[in-house]
Structure formats: C-alpha cells, structure tokens
Amino acid sequence: MSSPPGSLSPLKRRHNTLLVASTSTDPPSKRARTTDAPEIEQPIENSESGSTAIIYAFQNPNDTDEGRDDKVVALSSTEGLGLITGMNCSFSEMDTEGHAQRVTTREAMKVGTGTEIAYPRHIKNYVEFMTVDQARRKTENPNWTIVPPFPITARNVAIFLNMETKRMSKSSDGQSIPGTRLGVSAIKQCISALESWRRTHEHEYPNNPEALRPLRLDSRIRTHETNAGATESERNAEAQITKALGSTADTYTEQELIRASVWCLRVEGTDQQVHLALRDRAMILMTTSTAFRGDNIRSLLLSDLYSQAVRLIEAGLDATAMALVLFSDQGKTNKTGRIDEQAAFRHRHPELCSFELNK
Image 1 (spheres, helix red, strand yellow):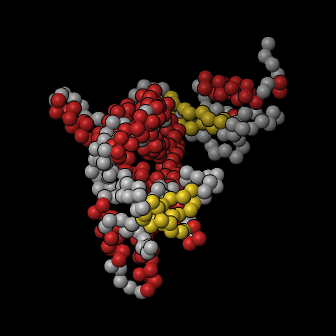
Image 2 (cartoon, one colour):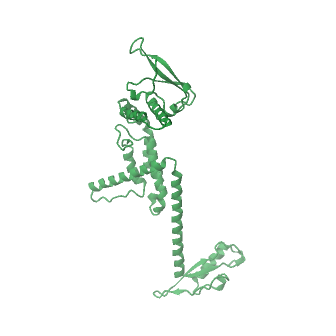
Image 3 (cartoon, rainbow, N blue to C red):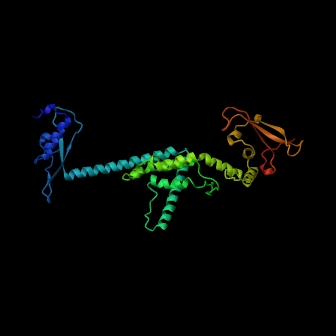
C-alpha cells in the first residue's frame, strides 16, 4: 500500500518523481515543471540507434515546501552536455585565478623573512642535482628514462637529501670548505623550501598523488631530518677540531682583515664619514682581538672601558703590557646580568691594532 503524497519527505518525493519521469516514454508533464519554466523541447532521437537521450535535473534541489510537487527540468543531451562543458570551463578559469592569487599572497608573505633568498637557493641546488644525477644514470644505463625535477616528490627529495646531508658547506663564493658539512638547521630549511614549492604548485599536478603528498609524511624524509639532528653534536665537535687545526672557514683571514682595516683608514669625505669609518674599523678589529660578539661591542659605553697593566710572566718577572679591558653584563651568552671582563692587547701588525694606549 503506497503512502499518501503528503506523508513523504521532500527527498523521497523527488526520487519518485525522477523515477517516474525517467521510465516514461513521454516527455515530463507540465505538472513536473515550474509554471515559469520554458517549454521543454521534445526528446532528440539518435538517428543511429533510434534511442532517445534526455537529461533530467531538479530545478530547485533545496526546495522543502511539502505543499508543492517536485520540479524537474528536462534537457536534451546536446543542451545538457553543453551546460556541463561550459560549467567545467568556468570552474577551471576560477580555479586558475584563485590559485594565482594564492601564489601571489604566499610570495608576499615571504618578503622580509629571509626565506625569499634562502628558499630559491635550495630549489636551485635541487634542480642542479637532479639534472646531473639523471644524466649520470642515463650514461650508466642507456635504457634509463630521465626523471624530471618537477613536480617535487618525496622520491626525488630523498635522493637529493642523501647527497645534501653529506656534502661540504660552501663559502660565499661557492667554494666547498674542507672538513665541514651542513648542520641540522640547513637540512630543515632545505626540506621546508622544497615543501613550500610543492605546496605552492600542487594544483598544477591534480592527477599525481605523489605531488599532492606532504614531504614530511614520507618516512625517508623524516629519517634524513631526524638523523641530521642526532648527529649535530658530532658535527660541532668536528668543526671545533677543524678550527683548532687552523681552519679559517668561519673567520676572516689575516689578509682580509688588513684590507678591511686599510680601506677604513683611506676613506675620504666629510668629517662625519671619516669618523664613521674609524668607528667601523675599531668595531671590526675589536671583535677579532676579544671574545666579544658584534652585539656586545655595539652596546658598550665609554664607562665600560678602562686600561690596565697586565703582567707577562713568560716575558719576565717584571714585564707588563697595557691592555684595554671591556666590561659587559649582557649578550647572547649572558642573559643573567653577569659581569664579564675581556681584555685586548696591542697587535704586532699596526693595521690590525684596534686601539692605542700609552703607559
């Protein structure tokens, strides 16, 4: 026994209406259309198969008025396919516009953060590695199919990180520094740079599941990142040994300091420009002759400086040398207000002497 029409839910009534309309050999009745809907064309018969193709769609699928009959609009196959094609084109254009706006916003967010320079450098290293690596594999195996660097996937990045975690650090001119390797912060930044590119361009590869998967969800990427942190103490110990053996990778060489010092003394211009050059020279040389960092030097006052005769027992029982003593109660390694004292002596090279004291 069928239920009265008024007792059916709106969803059930729509289902029944669509079922009746799709099984009927006649076009939908006027009762199945809205009063203001245009007249529905007769179904188009396929001349080859003799079949009739009609697309039925609810005109108002959100209607919950139980006092009305469901409204169905019938479209021919040509009209329906045209509507779907046009809608897909509109969706595609809107998606492209939305993603372009998102990329622009993400690039603007990087300005002033330091990543606007660092991230492209990591991407450049990745592309160069993939190009060389694939060329090598092709040479070793002529049947090898070249794998492009893009899209960025965990598979490609894992191979890249295996090299990146072992290579030597590079100087500002791109030269490798013997006895060094990248630290955990550099590895983390590298992964973040590659993940940022992947996330920014993932909409360009909607049918590639690997391009849509975050890098850090892959066990290979997590292993490289975890291992970099676990071996950081070992890397620091190696760096200290390298410095003790005479490496100057992290400091200026003596000749570089002499050139900088002489350049400051040769500055020409107004009195203010000359004074600034002398100030800069004193700050540069003071950091090399003491254990003070740049931020410690910049916060010093004249009242924090004094001179003192320091005994040099190695030179003789009565031998002394005048030293400039600096007071400091704050800095990167001093957050508790502890009073630190550092002394600087005259340098044997006048160009590298940061001060002048008279006995």
